[in-house]
Amino acid sequence: MREVRRKRWISTCEEHEAPVTQVGFVGAGRMGAPMVARLVQAGHQVAVLGRTEEKRAAIAELGASAVTTVAGAVEGADVVVVCVFTDDQVRQLCLDGELVAAMAPGSALVVHTTGSPRTAQTIASKHPHVDVIDAPVSGGPHDIAAGTVTLFVGGEDAAFERTRPVLASYGDPILHAGATGAGQLVKLVNNTLFAAQIALVAEGVRLGSRLGVDEASLLNALVHGSAQSRVLAMVAAAGSADRFVSAVGEFITKDVDVVRDTVAGLGDDLGELDRLVRMVTT
Image (cartoon, rainbow, N blue to C red; front, top):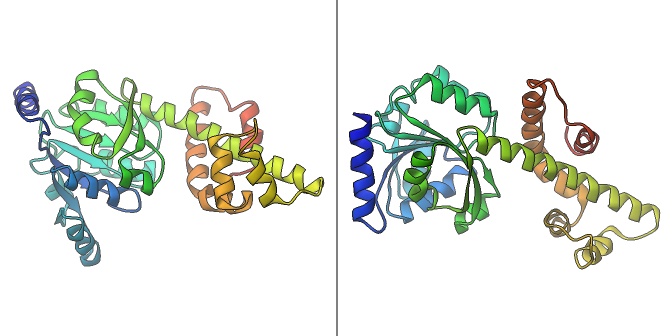
């Protein structure tokens, strides 16, 4: 059954330049809402879980179908996308809840939530009737709306290729990092380095302050020098290091906590990176 469904899906993709896929979606919040909008704009049929009337109204404005249950979101879906905030929420939905069990054989689950690689691997092990793709994002809602959010993807080659048309609705580049869980591993390294680089910029600002240099003037100058980096440009655009840390601290802290837990499970730690990331995480 799984192979028949897969062949039918691949055949559909080959017959149409822009294949239409039925997509179930859970987590149409800050990051998920622009994904839903892009999926609809790409011509996919999208059913989104909305637990309140207000949420369902917002989903309808995006052009998607609003459903009231998890089962309703996954019914008939070729791809189910999960974009909730925490790894615990993913586990509640996909391991403790009915979401994956209700998915059709041969369909694919895409998890955008940054979390432990073990979560995606456990889901795949527990529910072999579906293909599990972990695809954490690097970027924000504005990148998703522009179709330029970076996706780090883990999963089998065939499953990755089948889900690419859905991911391409909002992702570019789409980077296949390896087997299930590999996308999460790359994202966790990325965010650890991101936090460390924020800390370096903040320390540079403190050094400038001790030397009597205005922070705004310093940041505006440094983006034109050899110290330039993407993180430095982002801090400069925010106007100050403290302001930038306040804006991203909650998300970075959540991801760094996952990194620590993952590395601790291997009997290791973050080494020299730990001192830096502690400066900007709460």
